[in-house]
Image (cartoon, rainbow, N blue to C red; front, side, top):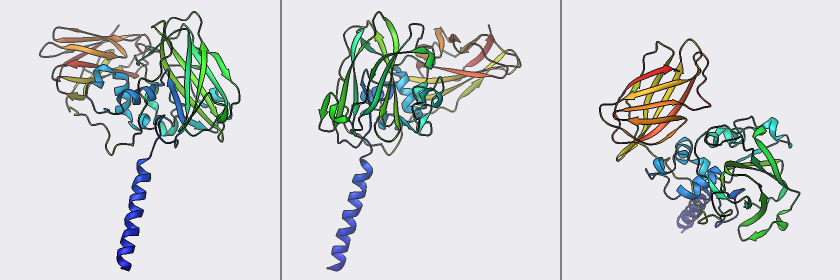
Length: 362
């Protein structure tokens, strides 16, 4: 009998430990064991979780949502832990703690977990009217010392530029507000509904939110891609994010060993490799390196054995013509110092093959 009781006790302890290990994050429809995020207009990592959390291994993500695809490939935990994008000990000196170009990852906080949020490209944008409501969820009921909402200046283009502090205009500040005074008191947290105005703005922009939680010195930073004049006002999340646990395995992708390199001589060189492939399509990454002198622009030509069809591309202007894929630098990555490098990528239909690669300075 003693052995039976002891076995039952050990079994109960094991089950309790497993349950505790599974509860890694909370969401607006789950227990309040979390921190929080901007749900609408959705921040980059929350938007990726909301759209793909229940199908994060779906191959169509690469073509339908390539910026989220690269983020899931870089670190799935950035989406599973969508409520943990914060820094501690900033003491209100946000610009000193977070360098330009790293605003969306909070200065590569959490050992770089959220670094992919800084990747330049065409992230999915929320259509907004000039007057909209920002929804900030606080799952742990921290409350706020303050909340600051910025909108990027008209000169800033989130599709082609890294975000800098000088790109932002402060448009709204909410003063100290304990959790008990937030707009919505929910069963699993609280939500602040913040009216925001960006009068006269049109087109793509970034909404940047700083939430200084009233919990130690804990600062949260959120990048939300938006499109002003895209129709309608700030939408609520299309579905409540359901509670999710971190998967035991990361998203898998079949990686091709094929790599092709242009000659190292001349003004620049390029290397192409297949990052992943699936039925009917593949994703390629091309690294471009300047030679022994700086270049002000570059062009890469990939010549295949058969016709190619480019479906998506980023960090370059990429066109397909017959059996060739031709790429020219974007406005922000054409100038390279001697020996400097950059990269671009694309998704193409068909089976991957090893092309002939040429690179020339322009």
